[in-house]
Amino acid sequence: MAKSDDDHPMMEGPIDRRFDEPAVTRSRYPNFSFPRRPNLSFKVSSSVPRVRPIALPESLGDKQRGAILQFGLRWVGGEPKVSGEDGEAAWRSAILLSDKIDWPIASNVAAGSADPGGLVTAGIMSRSPIALEGRVSEDQVNHIPFSLFEALDGREPGRWSIWAGANEEPIPTDATAPDLAFRLKLNRALILPHKEVPFTNLVEFKRRHADKVIKLRHHLERLGLQVARNGWEPAETTLEIEALDVAIAAYLEEARKQNWRKVLANLEFSMNWVGAAKGAAVAAVVAAAGLPLSGAVLGLGEALSSSIELKSTRGLKGRRSESPFEYLAEIDREFGT
Image (tube, rainbow, N blue to C red):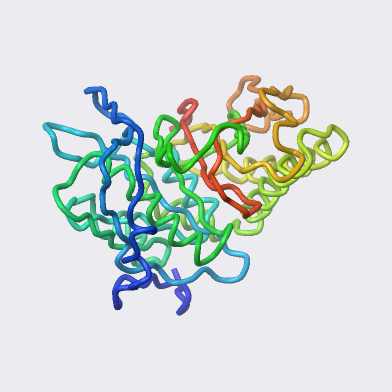
């Protein structure tokens, strides 16, 4: 793939001394609770870990969006190990819908390949180095994506978000408060390549159908912004859903033509309420009528309707940006060969 100067991540450079400030590098957490079974999300402890970005990736271009990947780790024998299964839908949906991806790499944890799937070489991914001071612990590992998010969101407000698997909790509890945000979930709305399909196939598909992918992201953000500002107002929201429906259908039409093994995925994102809209749609569940995706469109040979779910959730304290701060993805089912 052709690369411009803007496409190459900055993986080396001087330490940014802004992140030596205790207010940025330290935070307190609620009590730790970590059940011992594989592929778990990390809960956060009451210790005060020092987690500090050493260098940041290059700034995003005009109108670009960046994704920070949750690690996808599990704890084995007291040590963090990379899980190849965990967060697979998040990885692939982030590649599809974001312009730049950063998978932060901790100084004390060997977390996967330095260039997974050739994404760094292709200019799609950077691996920002994160300093973990002292003995590596579960709460430090949990804080890695959010520490990078804080730094990048401070530099480019509203342009970066955290992408994680549906069962992961990458944001420390003490950074949020109840009912400051809403979570909007699109059930069965994305076709993605199966985990056995190389990342390069998805990157090439995205390059060839960039217009459809950008429209899909644009209308996702437009719907979220409408809800954030006004709650669930049927007249305005219906228009945004109709535009999103057209964008999803256009994307699915191209995705189902691909000669990949495929998965059907759910996608959800969280945004803070804005002003008077806070609490306007608390615990609301929206019917599927606004987003009719038929089996014929999906190419599955059966009737599968998509639905939108909306509920109030924990939001980021002190956040001013009108954009999603977190995306979650999960695989609904596999199909194709």
